Image: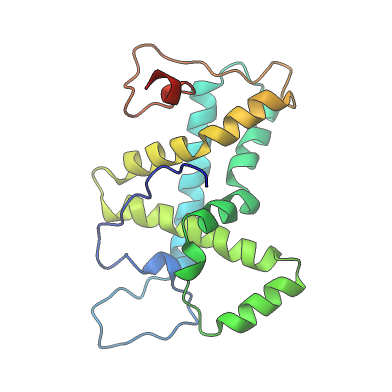
Amino acid sequence: ARNLPPLPEITDPNLVESPFRHKSFGYDRSSTKSDVTYERLEFLGDAYLELFASRLIYHHFPALQAGAQSQVRELLVKNETLSEYARLYGFPNKVKVADMETMLRDAKDRGNKGLNKILGDVFEAYIAAIVLSDPENGFAIAETWLTALWAPKLMEAAASQKYSTPSLTLQSDDKADPCTTYSPTAKADL
């Protein structure tokens, strides 16, 4: 199994289940829990995801042309990538929909694109919940986590030569804080 960075905790009790709950899942109106669903959070999480990926690529790969930057960002934020991460973190077991069997059957008939889309949306919703649950630090927590999560995919892209003009090489900042900055040699350095 792949070494994953620890999944950041959602600290707001009203948002803990929200990234996993579909609008079809019934609400207990007497409950004090939030009625926020993953569809609503996904809207915000999608924007954060694009921003985090863009900042990472812009700052660490300055020689990359704009078109190549967009291609690398797409590699990081596409549903296939996000659903892979969702599976690795066990999100499918947490998703709450009114009729899971129908959802899975429909997803299978669509070549699993339906399920990948749902898991990608849930992953984006989780990102939004991290940020919203800690107004002071959530943004930095989510960005640091995603940077570590994306590191292997970025190193794969760099090795593939697909982005070879100019080559995808990581620019590091010697003055950067090692606790919050991606380093491709962190494991070896440790």
